[in-house]
Image (tube, rainbow, N blue to C red):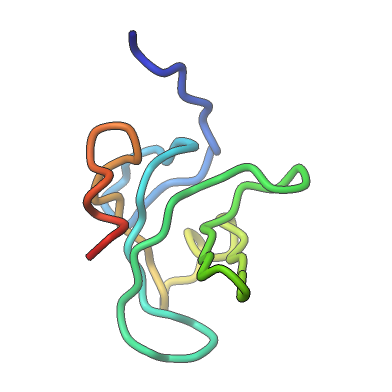
Length: 88
């Protein structure tokens, strides 16, 4: 059974439309800790890349990431077909 995916209307660095459930990779704009891989979720009416480490959660508004030329993001898979991306 295929998952119905919702468009975020944001575009990645390669011109691909980003959907809820995609996993995006980008440079951490806050901590500058290198490249991070995060799932795209709808949180409080805003599409975000969500970093959830149990007691610590950070959200990166997707429209900010996809339009920031210094911190462009790239789709590397999705949570339905590539769950292993989130454990790497």
